Image (tube, rainbow, N blue to C red):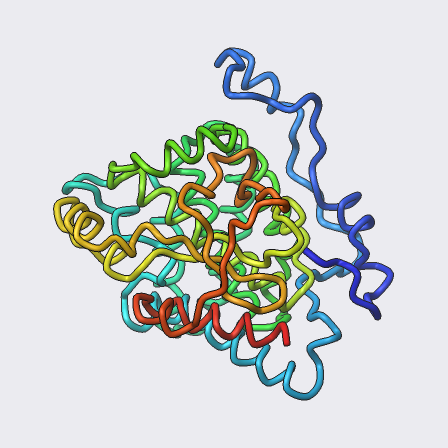
Length: 353
């Protein structure tokens, strides 16, 4: 992502943020590390201290302050704000959190960070005086807990934590800077450390393996996990288009693609059970098509199997620039199968021009 916008205040340069806010670690931990070694390894991580000055992050990018860019940015921000609003006013989940994150075959998954987030959001939905202050106090405590205990979480809990942190971030963006929500430092540091650890949990593979895995992926629960990560990636990348969102530096994506891959079709995402999901995949060959948003704002198709197995959080396999693996397509074809998330992608594309 581009961190070269002008007029960035000196105190908010990426290097200064990294030095004050992001944790550093010894040699990268791998999944093969013995369980007994994990606690010793992650004992080197400590909760970052709050800067002595009133430093705030999530600063708007200056190139979006005027004209059509400002109008489009405001529409994108309104769309992002609507996601926690859905939870507060309509008791529903935003389009990047799947219901299976909370219930799977009648049994709750281990996603305590997400269920805690829902409880905290319900706290402020009542509008009771003082609820916002209490909300942000609890968000800070939850961030500190997740930062300290992230190494104990399994991959579903890590995904739930990243989703919960995204909701806190969107509420923070919705409010602007207030007396009670000065949690930017711990919030972004927690996103970073969990994002780094989440990446270590995923399987690395070469292109040949990725092609194979994509063609045989038939487990609904695994698909929900991967699609949830994909949609969460969209949220974090779009936020980074609006504000200086430094954890986005963890995302590695070739420079000619802005968001890749794009979310799957509505019929798959909203399937109420595994049999419906399998029937939709089998009966509609178009479900296998993978789309991406190019840095030019063009919608492109990726060949089947060009998803990554993963070498890091929200990271996708680089395409061979010498291969003609992408073809132009039209927005109508893609939008015909998209859910409410499609509008966010289209707004992001219009912001590029």
